[in-house]
Length: 589
Image (cartoon, rainbow, N blue to C red; front, side, top):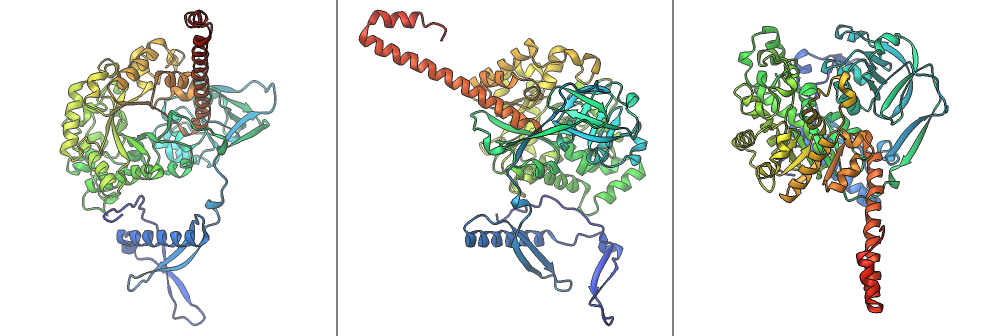
């Protein structure tokens, strides 16, 4: 639309060579080394990109109308090196992506009824069985020795490991639970993982051939050698419609191009942290105040990284906006709920320039995180850049389907302070712009009706709510057996907040792990009246099928009652006494 500049990705290529016309006899063109000054510049201006996008849209509309069916096009273009004029040089129907079969649900199962004892077991993440070679990485300093396509085996992972996690066939860690870094990232990347094995790095040897088995159960297993398995495919066309909205948990913008075909009603949790780590790479306060950076080398890296922007702050705003905007574009015009940053202090400190801005804490999990950062002088200016990025997504990219969500908001006073700062940055709560709050602290449940006056909806974070209700460190493998969202205390709080939110006229959803991991949990949420359930990509289809069956049973129950009442009315006409008896003693039904 006019006024919007919806560019979702910008990257400087290497451009080592430049092809030019040759004056040498017998040669039409030749390659020369590209001058460094040109290599460091973008080839296209933003205006060029928008012009090409508009032309492409017109071309596709023309051929779609001509063929009487939607016709994606493969279009080639050129830019004159002297005049800067753009040309379309070829357009033909696209024959690769557009010809792919509809999205399929794939399940894996070992074919042998009684497989041998596994070498190790742990918490299963994702659904896949594969054969692979172990690549043992014990330390972050050894990351360069990782062999692409192998199964990564390590004690633990953190954001520094993401590049090799992308290249791995599977992931195995000694430590961590279902919500640890390795588990979260592997779900995003679509890579199967087994976390919390305790002895993976001891029992698995580098170069060893193994079978990694994540077959949909809670327990993942690694077997010696290559075991036979089968791949069961379910066509997406067989997935029934349901009343409960199914949304997606997502963070990696690159994943948007993998999961966009899923039958979802939007994105219920778009995690900002991943885009900050993988795209922005620097601490927001270091970009807001580069003059406060004490390490000259770090400062030089940041200035080099942001050289194409007027200020480092502009780099933060535009880069963050494009990353999150990719997620918003994936499901447009469906709703995307972006959670504002929820790093812990130890995680923030690992970002470029972060050491100058983060305090050391004994327990970052319940420390300086979430809403408490946003109004603090320590991070107020960093939060302002986050707000500017959201405004850029909505007003410059034109993606007004973005809603924001405030994490770890402990008190009503905090809520008021954060909303005031957002309004000062141009993000006013309105009919057009909604602000949600994470329900992950017990105070959010106890004071749900008061929080409802400040926010437009709730998203239940079952991971933190369980942690704070039961007093359990969710990443402690020694307590993993009692970290359970199905605990009566947790379920009571979840039912209570759903009830209070609905009574206050507010939407309420859930974005934690429980509906994905525990059969029956999603069904409990449906019975409680939840509006939406946000899931990891690998859980969307199986949970959707479970909910469809449950909703069908509920509908049958209502239908049965209706038939009973019809019989009663007929009975009144025939025999008042029998009809009354049927109402007073309706039997099992």
